[in-house]
Length: 403
View (cartoon, rainbow, N blue to C red):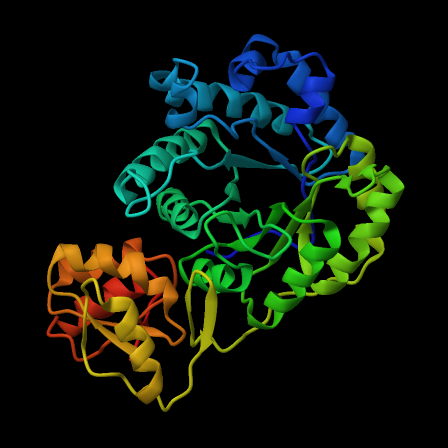
């Protein structure tokens, strides 16, 4: 889904660090503290409005059921999300002088997905859907899945959130090497998430602003959606002043970011400086691109018309070796999925491939589950013995390429 609003968009700044400065104690549940002290949030968000932001985030970063369970209130997730989002939506609606947008904030659970951890993909979807639907009911204009540290969890959040029908922005956080905690890289993530229906994709928090600009610039030629940059104000020499922060943001705008804001350590003063600079800067709008690109979480592949599949590769404990062998005599590895356990093997070893992955299965159920769970963008073999309209529908649902 495309964003229905004119670009550029200026996001707000930090919430957690600012509320701590306003008196929120350490080790409390931030969401419960905000509900007990709603004026603190309203005062902060009003300052961001005065600073010129276009979008206010709801204070629901840690409000999924898993995180709230750590404070013994997981069963109240629906109610807490509605109440917190209502505070932000009410304030935005009260500002009659200009249109303010609200973004329902969704963030990671802190759990590891199977097969690397114990949490199923369905559990992530369920948790994120619970939060997304509550935020939608509260009246937000869009959803933003932010600070995602794995492409698997980012995909689960996006799949759940897009079912609301609202535009969904997804931002990841990466280290100095440009990798998420799970090893995903930004360019493959952009290819994967935009094909899955994200309205915009980007980075928040993450590496320093210069490193973020490099990631945005690399992704721009392959991005069909707006790129987002929401860096923190923390530099190698400590917290940046508003003026220095705005100056550092110039390369991000030049690299192609058109939705920008501030993360940890940013204040209304940082956002005000960014507003002035944004209004003077030419905007790079998304463009039509060749969408025939595929990805595993650590690498992007740009397809040509002369794709040659390998012989069908069985998903077993030797899959990694077979993927290496396939590189020698084909330019796409054709993976046979015959039983549910094959999907787990593909998830475990598929990220090692250095050529695109194509899926062959004669089961629509297995095809759906494979495309739904795999952290990347796959090719689907058009010769699968699945009714063609159904095959194409499943592939489109998850942004896969049919060849």
